[in-house]
Image 1 (tube, one colour):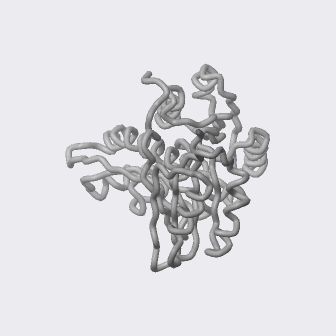
Image 2 (tube, rainbow, N blue to C red; image 1 turned 90 degrees about the vertical axis):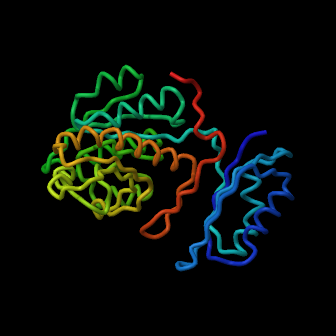
Length: 294
């Protein structure tokens, strides 16, 4: 029996959970894990279920049969196969801590994705990427060639069938066109606990303000810089005795962990867009298990 994930969102109504669970029971499906949330203020209901079909129903048949239920509640829904690894492109510049962390997690199976390419505007990490048998593309980006560079990046996205772009400290601002075309499918790591200290050099800004906590934020990329819906955040404590360089060094670990957790949530269909915010459900049992330890 294979696992299937159902994601659904619709206006808040009475009977949604009953209708979904009744449908799955009638189809011979056994629910293993379920999360739900009603945003009453914005009249939006969100649900994610993990289940197995004990009668062999597949995603296509479930999608067809579930359409009547979805229509009744004006519901957006999808059935997902968690065994199918999402195709991901990683983009990086000269800071490699997030890239190296993601490659390690990918190698041991802790991040079950299919990394189809790494794109960079520098050559620093070509060798480490190629040594992982992953295609590496160096695309120089300047003010003069930015449209052509992004066109080449999008060509790689289309040719590889990439479903997600991860900006692993990629230090270039994406165009409005690229953000719109890949809306909800680009995840960035910002080296600050947003909404504080946006833009360039946030660690220096934090130092100058004398903060006692620094952090990192992973969010979806939109045309509004650093304003995209937040997926994951974390912090680490600092003291008056530490320098801006200390902040940078301490922040690297937080950035790597926050980005990895955001990607993990996205690929397991646990993140729902809710206007300018997100709904992020907890992981199902077994989702953090690795194929091997090292």
